[in-house]
Image 1 (tube, one colour):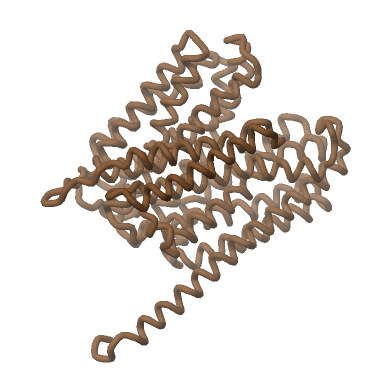
Image 2 (image 1 turned 90 degrees about the horizontal axis):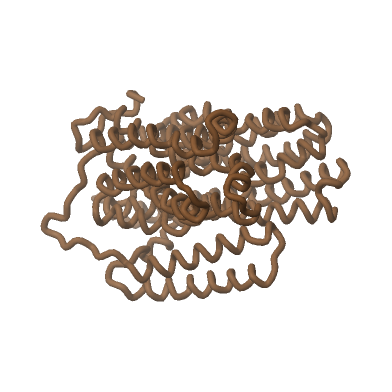
Length: 483
């Protein structure tokens, strides 16, 4: 980490700044993945139904999705260091409450509070990179944060399973407490001090916009998750609420003096391109998590241990490749690496359609080994490109938008790609589907995923071409004496 460069605006060694940000990222992703394995035990411990216990996960994800942009903007206003320290403290306190709670309703409420803390950590870690790391090393820092996120995702199920088999389900939440205290100490000690608004009026926080955006995002996330992939009246009603809420949000943002999201921001080609491709790519990656377990168990007949081993290949590659991807971004430039990463993902999707058909498990692993590095390259490059030239007073909200686009892609992918898979398998009961039908379902799903990735690649290439034309036009229009 010492190779990332000198810290800016603070006397702290940059390695400790990055360490505090990395641990924050690890905690937020660990909180997402570790609780899933405990759901059966929680249902037994509290005597609740399977549908009810899902809210242990859903409350956490909804809090992140609905508030991540708002807390990013709040950090821009009140100070990112101050808010991140508060977010880590909130996450740690909520983890304690989750582990000690005597009742199920309190557990769900504590998970929602834990999600608020995670939203703050996720939104502000990337925002800090621009102010703490030399610009030519931003890609390496983004790659490291991607690595920590992947480690948290990969470690969650195995750590949760070990704790569940040993101390019990409470330990899954309490293990966050010592990690949170270390992150809190590092952030308080080493993060750069907040810049004040000397000579300028502090912007007001957009409360109306925050409520409308939270309502819209919450309704959309629920529409994509309730019903387990089958769309009914409730899903349509929630999508209608989301659409109306978004329309009202845009109206409010165009009129308030200090909007949560300036409408002009969304017309910025770099930001709009980065958000759209990020959402598409996240939708594609969710297909590996939704379809992969069914294909490996039902299509190839692997036992649970082998399924878990094969599914760990992707997260392990992500954990090992994040820093390397970041260094490639620093060397070659973000724009070029976005294109290379997306091209590798297109090849990976094609490989998932073809290779498992001929080579079984080996073909699946080989395809994942092609898809995952492409994703890591894209993530490091896209995050770097979007955050590169953001003004200091908007880094929090832009970082929040990046994380939001990823979360919305994951939520959408779980519903849409799951529906594509189920339709292609065409079996009333997935457990009784023939292996050939499951294999065909996976081929169709990743053919669709490949088309989505091609769309993302086309957006990236068109954006780069348009940017090059505009740069050339600007240079041509510049007076000769100024060149």
